[in-house]
Length: 123
Image (cartoon, rainbow, N blue to C red; front, side, top):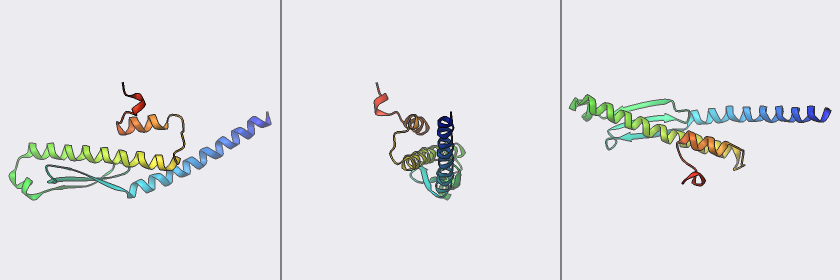
């Protein structure tokens, strides 16, 4: 019975350590930035590793053309590109945190998060 309590204590301690590491990871990701661009760089969107949009720049020439639909399409494309890069940044940070350890389910979770299919899952 005491052995089970000892194992439970170890699990709780490990969970607390992981929780602390995840908090540090969130702080680190908040400071890391990636940029998505569309229209040859006429629209740029910057996000951090937490997928928060930090900046959106639309070239003045594009605005002066007055093509609202084009601007909307380019902003959407730039945001989507930035999100993909941000998800990859996040996935890389989680891999770094786990130190390459094979933790059950982590690779599958990262593949779903980033929208990538692991090579072993390809048909």
